[in-house]
Image 1 (tube, rainbow, N blue to C red):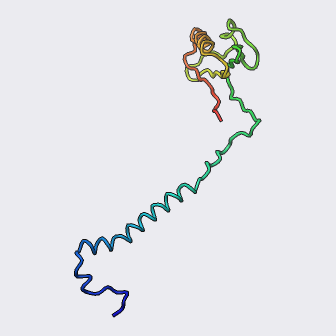
Image 2 (image 1 turned 180 degrees about the vertical axis):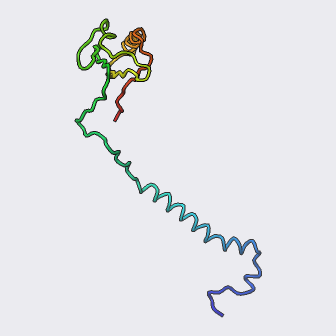
Length: 137
Protein backbone atom coordinates (compact mmCIF):
# COMPACT_ATOMS: atom_id res chain seq x y z
CA UNK A 1 0.00 0.00 0.00
CA UNK A 2 1.11 3.57 -0.64
CA UNK A 3 2.61 5.13 2.54
CA UNK A 4 1.12 8.55 1.67
CA UNK A 5 -2.42 7.26 2.00
CA UNK A 6 -3.72 6.59 5.50
CA UNK A 7 -4.68 3.10 6.43
CA UNK A 8 -8.36 2.31 6.32
CA UNK A 9 -8.57 1.43 9.99
CA UNK A 10 -7.04 4.86 10.92
CA UNK A 11 -9.85 6.66 9.09
CA UNK A 12 -12.51 4.52 10.69
CA UNK A 13 -11.20 5.15 14.21
CA UNK A 14 -11.68 8.94 13.91
CA UNK A 15 -15.05 10.53 14.42
CA UNK A 16 -16.88 12.44 11.74
CA UNK A 17 -16.22 15.73 13.55
CA UNK A 18 -12.48 15.09 13.55
CA UNK A 19 -12.51 14.35 9.84
CA UNK A 20 -14.56 17.52 9.06
CA UNK A 21 -12.21 19.65 11.17
CA UNK A 22 -9.22 18.29 9.29
CA UNK A 23 -10.89 18.99 5.96
CA UNK A 24 -11.87 22.56 6.97
CA UNK A 25 -8.45 23.60 8.25
CA UNK A 26 -6.92 24.34 4.80
CA UNK A 27 -10.02 26.33 3.84
CA UNK A 28 -9.82 28.41 7.02
CA UNK A 29 -6.13 29.06 6.39
CA UNK A 30 -6.89 30.15 2.84
CA UNK A 31 -9.61 32.57 3.99
CA UNK A 32 -7.25 34.16 6.52
CA UNK A 33 -4.52 34.50 3.90
CA UNK A 34 -6.96 36.16 1.50
CA UNK A 35 -8.12 38.48 4.26
CA UNK A 36 -4.54 39.48 5.04
CA UNK A 37 -3.82 39.99 1.35
CA UNK A 38 -6.74 42.37 0.87
CA UNK A 39 -5.93 44.29 4.04
CA UNK A 40 -2.34 44.83 2.91
CA UNK A 41 -3.32 45.55 -0.70
CA UNK A 42 -5.89 48.09 0.48
CA UNK A 43 -3.25 50.01 2.38
CA UNK A 44 -0.71 49.92 -0.43
CA UNK A 45 -2.93 51.45 -3.09
CA UNK A 46 -3.37 55.11 -2.23
CA UNK A 47 -5.14 56.76 -5.14
CA UNK A 48 -4.67 60.53 -5.17
CA UNK A 49 -7.73 62.71 -5.49
CA UNK A 50 -8.46 63.70 -9.08
CA UNK A 51 -7.69 67.27 -10.08
CA UNK A 52 -10.78 69.41 -10.23
CA UNK A 53 -11.47 70.94 -13.64
CA UNK A 54 -11.19 74.68 -13.95
CA UNK A 55 -9.17 75.35 -10.81
CA UNK A 56 -7.19 78.56 -10.81
CA UNK A 57 -3.42 78.44 -10.89
CA UNK A 58 -1.51 79.92 -7.98
CA UNK A 59 -1.24 83.67 -8.33
CA UNK A 60 -4.39 83.97 -10.42
CA UNK A 61 -7.22 85.82 -8.80
CA UNK A 62 -10.72 85.87 -10.16
CA UNK A 63 -12.72 87.86 -7.66
CA UNK A 64 -16.46 87.41 -8.02
CA UNK A 65 -18.48 90.39 -9.18
CA UNK A 66 -19.72 91.94 -5.95
CA UNK A 67 -21.97 94.96 -5.63
CA UNK A 68 -20.39 95.87 -2.28
CA UNK A 69 -16.91 95.05 -0.98
CA UNK A 70 -15.99 95.42 2.69
CA UNK A 71 -12.23 95.63 3.32
CA UNK A 72 -10.49 94.31 6.41
CA UNK A 73 -10.31 97.79 7.93
CA UNK A 74 -14.07 98.28 7.48
CA UNK A 75 -13.83 100.47 4.37
CA UNK A 76 -16.75 100.07 1.95
CA UNK A 77 -16.30 100.00 -1.83
CA UNK A 78 -18.93 100.09 -4.55
CA UNK A 79 -17.58 99.39 -8.07
CA UNK A 80 -13.96 99.84 -6.88
CA UNK A 81 -14.58 103.33 -5.44
CA UNK A 82 -14.66 104.05 -1.68
CA UNK A 83 -18.04 104.95 -0.22
CA UNK A 84 -19.00 106.27 3.20
CA UNK A 85 -21.71 104.58 5.24
CA UNK A 86 -23.97 107.62 4.83
CA UNK A 87 -23.93 107.52 1.02
CA UNK A 88 -23.94 103.72 0.76
CA UNK A 89 -27.64 103.37 -0.13
CA UNK A 90 -27.44 105.99 -2.89
CA UNK A 91 -24.38 104.38 -4.57
CA UNK A 92 -25.73 100.82 -4.61
CA UNK A 93 -28.15 99.50 -7.24
CA UNK A 94 -31.81 99.80 -6.31
CA UNK A 95 -33.22 96.95 -4.20
CA UNK A 96 -34.66 94.19 -6.39
CA UNK A 97 -36.85 91.37 -5.09
CA UNK A 98 -35.51 88.96 -7.73
CA UNK A 99 -31.80 89.80 -7.64
CA UNK A 100 -30.00 89.80 -4.27
CA UNK A 101 -27.28 92.28 -3.39
CA UNK A 102 -23.85 90.60 -3.50
CA UNK A 103 -21.44 91.44 -0.70
CA UNK A 104 -17.78 90.37 -0.61
CA UNK A 105 -16.23 90.75 2.84
CA UNK A 106 -12.52 90.43 3.56
CA UNK A 107 -11.53 87.75 6.06
CA UNK A 108 -10.34 90.48 8.43
CA UNK A 109 -13.80 92.04 8.73
CA UNK A 110 -15.25 91.65 12.20
CA UNK A 111 -18.75 90.39 12.72
CA UNK A 112 -19.70 93.72 14.29
CA UNK A 113 -18.70 95.62 11.13
CA UNK A 114 -20.57 93.18 8.93
CA UNK A 115 -23.67 93.36 11.11
CA UNK A 116 -23.69 97.17 11.06
CA UNK A 117 -23.48 97.17 7.25
CA UNK A 118 -26.29 94.60 7.03
CA UNK A 119 -28.44 96.79 9.29
CA UNK A 120 -27.80 99.80 7.01
CA UNK A 121 -28.79 97.71 3.99
CA UNK A 122 -31.93 96.52 5.73
CA UNK A 123 -32.94 100.12 6.45
CA UNK A 124 -32.29 100.96 2.78
CA UNK A 125 -34.79 98.29 1.69
CA UNK A 126 -32.57 95.35 0.79
CA UNK A 127 -34.24 92.08 1.78
CA UNK A 128 -32.04 89.57 -0.08
CA UNK A 129 -28.27 89.57 0.35
CA UNK A 130 -25.66 87.08 -0.88
CA UNK A 131 -22.41 86.94 1.07
CA UNK A 132 -19.63 85.88 -1.30
CA UNK A 133 -16.85 83.75 0.16
CA UNK A 134 -13.60 82.22 -1.01
CA UNK A 135 -12.98 78.51 -0.62
CA UNK A 136 -10.09 77.62 1.66
CA UNK A 137 -7.35 75.72 -0.12
